[in-house]
Structure formats: structure tokens, C-alpha cells
Length: 541
Image (cartoon, rainbow, N blue to C red):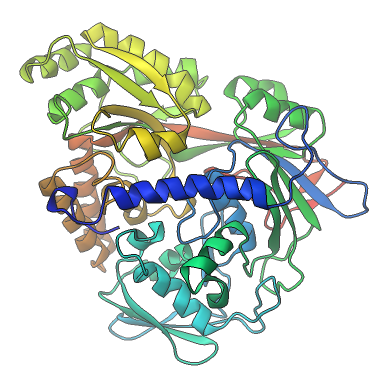
């Protein structure tokens, strides 16, 4: 994710479009190329069993929409799978978000100036195919992200590690990191890079095959996957790390249909479900454990900031002021959410309230439109088919009518939104969800996802060069600041900048609700992000 801009004629547009189409094609290839499971009456695949093996069955709230190569995988299903089959040197616990040593034998060792780190692999680490994990694999996993063969289409993870200059293997188990500048969050941040075998990803053809049939060093291995039949995993017999699998197999159904997920749990087909419908929370309590956690996950508005009248920030601000967020949360989310008072959710340890907070203010919204010279505003509101978005969008459209704004609703799958609609010149406004907190929860990481580089600022909401440069300078300066208090001051400036400009900004942050049967699965908790995670979980009956 570089900071170049499309009007400079540099690497965006077509390359990103190609990547989107490639991801869609990859999902199709997965459906055709991997073994399919049998269909079921409720969700996308039926639960197996009867072979004497211990197994966990679960139903996720999303279907497979991309491949699994961890350099690029960002879909909810793929990232959840990768947390079970792949490892970083350091990983973040998906529930507590605390770091722990995964492939690393010990904590990274820093030089006195903080510009060099040395990391040693744990003894006897192997990939699921039985081949040893080497320092060369580690160096390659970082280098392929930092310096990809196709520089016009950098991997998604590149934007998270701009502080790394080079990574080299100094012997078979030791890797040396050279940094461009000292970075206080080094240990936690290197968790975004999962270690892959160089032999399986060394060229474009190998990487393409790996994307559909990944090999990792985690406690599980992927046996099959498809959009239609879900995910099947099994214990990795070669794993010797700190979190061994406690069941032989796992079957994950995948469906965006909320009623199907509830039916799966209540019918005993699964032991856990993701994204419990808010209206079903009370009825599930008692027999099932229901985890409710405040999440970063946000419902946001994103504008084409090059297209009039949305090029005027006053118009963007007006649409935010016009929304009665508390009413939306009460009606659409049954109260399971919080109105955005910052880009960060209030549960984040680094939360700071933004200087601009969009409280419900009809008169201010009207005044801003008048100042901008905008009357009789009409546009198409594109939305993803996420269940929360589908509930929120009609309410927002009705509230906009109170300030004389008319929007028509156009709901399509996420792949079509980002692969087809948003890149077009006709795109104006999008409502969708976003949750990069699956990769980490520090302010630097969360802000870089949406506000740094090409993918979102350049290609999607077309932010101005001036604003993009200002944001990049703030984030980079904060990243190079060793003093925590000073770093937080810079982060506050960045949070205030996006709150004022609102090119992409949350309406609300949701609460994530997970339900499971405590009589059948132990050692499990719901996460405050997308996905279900069974590291250390076992079947009790």
C-alpha cells in the first residue's frame, strides 16, 4: 500500500481491479477444486460424525469469498481459517488480543538503537506436510510482502509493516530484521505476517496453487473448502507449538442467513455460531452461553470524494449529522451497538474521543447543505449484503429525507461492490461494514487499513493528495515516536482529521454476539471481531 495517488498515474486502478477479480476467481476455484461436503437443510453443509473422532462443528456468518494466502487474505472466513492453520513468529490471541510466541522460540531481541531485531525459530517446527520451517522461509514470507514481484499490486499486508527495510536468514533458525526506523510495536506487529513455505510460494504459479491449498505450521490443516460446502479442518500431526489441537477435526458451515445459524445451534448440528441475531439473544440465554462483546466492527459511510457534491466535506458531514444513531441502534441492532464518537470504538484501550462528534442534529445538517449550495440532493446508496447493513440502511435513508435528501438503495455482495461498483466513475456513496481489528487493535494498524496507501484512500474514496499526505505524515511520525504519550497525541490528530473530513467514517460500532453450547464444547469464548476461534477448545460430549 504505497502513498502514491491515482492522478499521478501511479499504480492503482486496473491492478486493484485485477486483484478483486482474481479473488473472485480464486473463490470459484476453491469451490470446484477442493473436496465438497454434503449439503444440509439449514446452512451450507451438513455435520459429519460417527467415526469415533472428536470433532467441533460450528456455523460462521460469512461465506468464502477469497483464497487463503495470508499475504492477501482479508475475508472473514479466510482469516479465521488462517488463525488455525498458519503461524506468525508472534501471534495475537484472537480472544484476548494479547501477543504470544508462536513460531518464535523467544521474544525478539533488539539492538541498542532499536533498528535491528533478531528472532530465533522454535525447535523442531514443521509445516503440515512435514517439511521443516526454516529461517529462509521466515525471510521469504516477509520479503514477498515487502518487495513483491508485481510492485503494481502490493499484498494487503504490506501497509502494516512499512517500518521494515529488509529481512534475512543468518542461519537455519535465526532471522535478522533491519528497520527503517525504531518501531515500538515491533513484536505485536510482525504477527500480521504468517510464515509460509518458500518452496510452495516461490513463483506466481506456486503462489496461485498455494492460495487454494495452503500449508501452514499451525495446529490444524485445511482439508477442504468452498463457498457452497464450508470448511473442513483436521489436526496437524506435525505441530509442536504452544497451542495444540484438542480435537481431531472441525467442520465449519458458512451462511449469511441468520435464521440458519440459529437453527444449526438449536438443532444440535453445531456447538457454536457466529453473529447471533440480536433479536435471538434472550431466547438463547440459559441453555447456551451467549458472549456479548463491544467490537471495533463498524457500519460506515464512504464517499467518492472526487465527485460533486461529495467533494465538499460539508455535504458529507451533513449526512452524518442527519442520522439519529441511537434510534438506528435501538431499532436495527436491538441496542447491541454504540454510536461512533471516534474512529475507534470506546472499548479500545487507545480510544480517544474525536474533536468532531456527529450527534443527531437536523438543523446543523440542513445548514451545512445550505452553506454548500446543495438542494434536492439525490443519489444511489450502494450497500453490501451484510445482515446488519441491510437492517441499518433503510432507517438511514428515511432519516435523510428529513433534510431533503433522497437516496435509493442498491444492495449487492461485497465482491461486486469493491470489484465492480466502487471503481466506476458513477459511484457516489457506500454503506458497508469493516473490521481490520482481526489483524490487531492498536491505533496505527487500524488507521493504516482505511487511511494509508492506495487501496482505500486512492482507489475507493479518492481522497485528495493533501489530506492523504497529512494522514501519512501523522501516522509515520507516530510510528517513529518512542514516547507513548507523544505517540498518542499524534494519533489524536489523525483521529480528528478523519472525523472532520469523513471520507470514510463510522456511523456506529457493533457489539459481536457469539453463542455456544457449554455442555458440548469447552475452552471456547466468543471474539470481539469476525470469525470463530477454537485454539485450545475441546469437545466435552
